[in-house]
Image 1: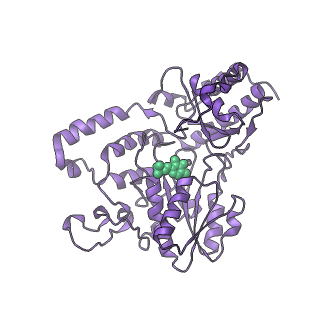
Image 2: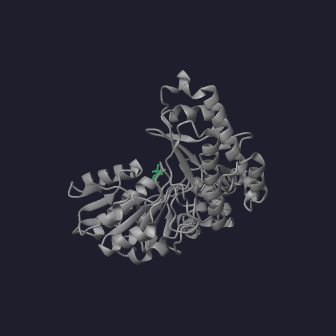
Image 3: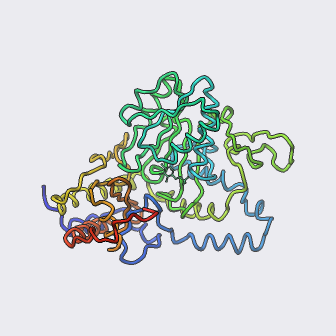
Length: 418
Ligand SMILES: *Cc1c(COP(=O)(O)O)cnc(C)c1O
């Protein structure tokens, strides 16, 4: 294989159709940020948009803002905009609550729609919050249900007539491996089960086609690849064919058909609105709205092509520069330029000193993260990363190894957030 040089890498940047987007984000000088899969970078428009909401809307209109500034409509209005990124239709997505809470709501809805079945099918590599929420719900429902965990390879073949819902995270948070959403959904439906997809590491990272796959339910967050800011509001999808039958248990007043009648009896709103529980957090929604403007302007196909190229370049450079250092690729090598996708927008390597290496890289201004037991994760956000950032990251990795910086005493104890 021909050696990759800095010139090759710079040529990729000069041919990059998305290069102009980088300037739309705030990025500290000199930092190589490869952690957009945990917390996306801040779009430059966010501070002004939030400030305008505070001064021009809340400050001037006070309670009138709910109508005048359409605050009450924002969860649905944003949902309709986000729907375009995830292959959903108008009225199928709402921006509300958190990913874990939305998962709880939709898992409850799905179980109630399959009253004769008792199994939630998932895999042990699912993101723990999803499994924890399922366990909590099972307790809540009296322990009648079972959370059945099978490997990624076994899932499609493991849907039987006991399974009420297949609950999966499309993109494995450690390895970046992606389920074939359409194939798993077909297998679930053939056995009469519903599907609930967690798209936390998918939405905004590569093309998602919920309706194309026939998905029933989905949830996702906004603060990773969608750049809405720390703790930004999450979202959920309910296929229109299920909206009449899907009932969620957090029956707050804003999911009521007529909240301002202050009726004593709960009556769910029509459509996706019944999944709203409480007063929406407008600051977070405004930041998300500003971030979505940029995502919707970019071409998702171009995002995917660059994401694959960044990841492939990273793998090739780590193997070229650090081939002897004991790294094992923990992500699928083939990413896929057409569906089914194999690798999401991250690349992970396993290494016994992974924690120390990630910390030493952070000390050098290359931000990745670490996941137990030995996974070093690097996320690729094509709108604000350059190919040269990948070059820089691997050069710093070489320097860390050469200096033995990862073996420093300071990295023996793990920090509380990794
Ligand atoms: C990040 C992430 C979440 C986050 O859940 P919150 O409730 O928003 O904290 C959930 N699921 C997956 C798969 C994630 O990667």
